[in-house]
Image 1: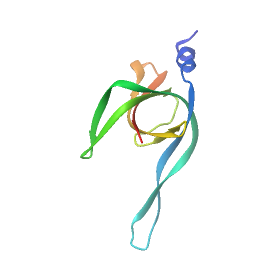
Image 2: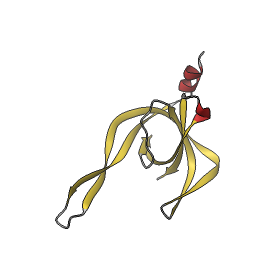
Image 3: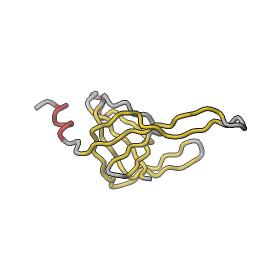
Image 4: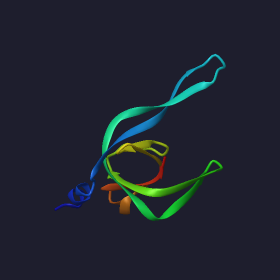
Length: 111
């Protein structure tokens, strides 16, 4: 069995990807932002980490206590939200697992 097939067999959930959108300006000139489904469902696996990872970005601290795994071909960006089994997870980190081009590890904050 190939490495790709083994990795894919451990992905036991399906998630929907949401990305921030920027709409038209309101009467005060402010951009209205929201979220829209990217139209992509991804096979994933979400699991708690033994030790959480704390990331600091733009002066804020994020506690990533979950990790997710997706196929390397998934189009995921930082700040995207992943909806799995009715729970949203915010993507704060993206790592190519071992540089093999098979899977991606996500650092996630549960909302």
